[in-house]
Length: 277
Length: 362
Picture 1 (cartoon, each protein chain N blue to C red):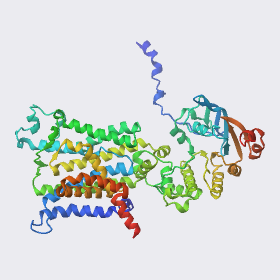
Picture 2: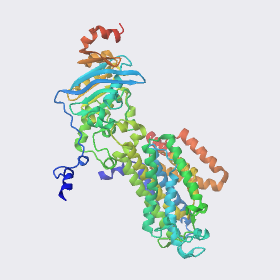
Picture 3: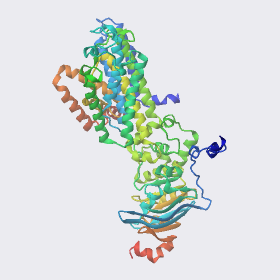
Picture 4: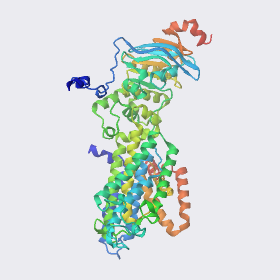
């Protein structure tokens, strides 16, 4: 009588619950080894065209990294891989020590702390600057909590702080649609900051900006680094020189050179492919 | 006071609330208390007519919520209005009892005429008002939930969504035209006698219905106003302007759309239920695609994305319709078409936009 029951013993251990009953706890970001982003051996091809070819990239915590490269070098595809929009054919991508980017969806990656600013600014034009930041704020985004939500003092302070950081304190009541191109870019950076990202991906932030706006953007990005890591993809060499501590040159989907701006500019390979000499 | 700021933030909505509140009290009083010979007397005909317009205004507000704020151009809201109306009509049919032409205690006249021997299953329960009241909201909401879930989850948007809402209303019209459906075929439901024991023919009941309709419109306005001035309301407008961006911020766009669509359908259902006892009939023509398009014209004329504009648009256009169909019967459809063109070209923000412009100029 007891004997057949014994065979089932392992199905009712009272000190354990079934695996499927254990709620899945997403791993916490761990940057104890200083590195926040690992891309190793990443390759991806579209219809036979190798957009990324055995790419290895490491970004440190708090670093401000510039990525330059001619058109088609794979800059945007690289961003797509980090944010989960594109899945690579091979290679690994980790966010800190614990979070595997390749096994996560776009919203999960955004939730984990990677924010991305697209090239073309998209803000909610009919809303005020303040409301744009309010909508972007990290909060419970489900329907009913959103319906009954009201701003706490703390959240208001956070919006005010962000307004100050991106230099839009005075125009917080203006409609986002009435802002200048540069201001829209800053507003969008502000919206990203409201989500408290740990790693910020910024795609061509100064395209179409005036000289003054460019200087202000450079200031903004350098002031943001340190507390969070920032990857900037940019064409404008003057701008890159003004912010970069470390520059990575992409060419045909892999890394051509890496170092500070002076090294890069004196690197013969870089001069050949990028500066066309 | 701060909790009520959602009402007072909209300066132009307050005159509307006052007007509705005044109408709710004054019109029944002027109808019942003031003798017919007096200049201030409001005739029962006029009162019922404006009661009907008020239900249209509520329907227009439901459409404005999804079109003006969320950017979903629904050309099928007549369906939800019609279903709410049919639910009310079924209750009113069951109230007739033995007073029908054929005098059958349970079966409505048209079923006796079709030689049916028992009540179809979906007619059970409609003899009880609370059950009917629940169905008035539940049935439109359920249809909106299923339809919206299928449409939004598969990310059908823009003109494609508008077209399938037209198909929805057209298919329901064809279905309800069939006698076998059990809703009275093309004659629909009519010959109602009383509602909650009050005779529908008496002036007192009509005045009461008018007051209830105005009251419901006020409540619906307040509910919509609360919704659009909440953070969720800002999310709605954000979805209208840059849907992908909202998704990227971590909101579940499809779920938001679905619940607002369902809410709007519920409002339309209540409007339909208030419409039927005042008009005295509900038939499948309520589902005709043209009806649903007309609702959109009301909202466009009034000014979308304002709520009070939708109410004003529904009242003005329907008043004009009653006037013109009386004065120049053939001209109405031309007038409606011309109105839509003029509004689209010269007044993209409708009457509400015109008023705002005046205010800013002053």
